Length: 374
Image 1 (cartoon, rainbow, N blue to C red):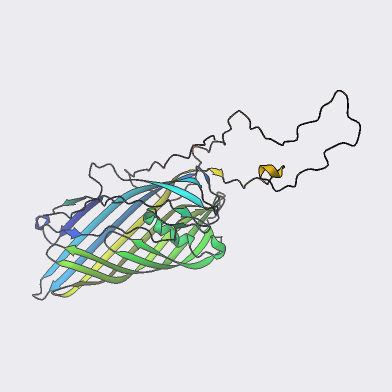
Image 2 (cartoon, rainbow, N blue to C red; image 1 turned 90 degrees about the vertical axis):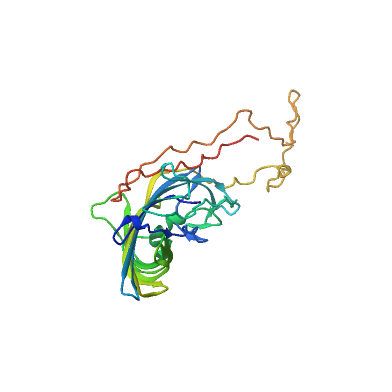
């Protein structure tokens, strides 16, 4: 999936110089990335919708051998929404998801870039869609095989590695996550501390995270060329988790740091990178819990495990006005169709101090499965 971008690219003394950055798209989420809370009870037809706001500012300064200093700045602002629906359960009881995404309706084709002051833009053609299996959720909240969950990567800081598999008040632990931005990747490792807000009765747990990130990336800048980024950056994050339903309500990750920029033909080069990444649960509808299979019943001829009844004849005399009851054990289903209960259209979520900007798209999750009669 390609995500449209709004890039404002400025350089040195004049926009007319036309600085162009060729930026690789964020890679898909790594296999088995933990982006959902462990212990959450899923139900058929359950829906979750997340909003994502991702911003980054990269400044590269290069001193040439002639002594000239060249400076380039890239601003990236991306908004995205991901909606998921539990369409059923696999043979192991793991929820199977259907996924939908939404992007700002700017009239710009997916995968293209809007750039100010650019002489030429990157190709940006949308990749051909590939058939992928429906992702499933493991018991610890990890996603397996397929899906476009890269945008939810920051929530792994609060969800992975917690004692007992889920954050509790007073818990402290270490976690890591890979945060991909359009200009660089941040391999984060943080120390987490969970606590409940004072006088809070909504069951919301706050996870504060502090640590560092290893920064790596490659960009191509006009008049500078291919530029490799290597450095480190401090990381601070705040995540909000509802303990009753075990839902990640939102997370904010911020990082500002500097490092070395490697540019051919330059005496010295350096960069400064500032990142702010926001994820928020916008809508939630619980589904119908996966009911366990009913116990085997009755007549073994119907496939049940019970032994056939043998002592069904009475030793008394046969009544002259009675007849023996049928013993074939046939079952006639009810002619009236039955339907499972309908999941709620939406459930209230506790307020959290996270806001998304105006114009945030909201994905429409795939429809819940419709029961069929056989």
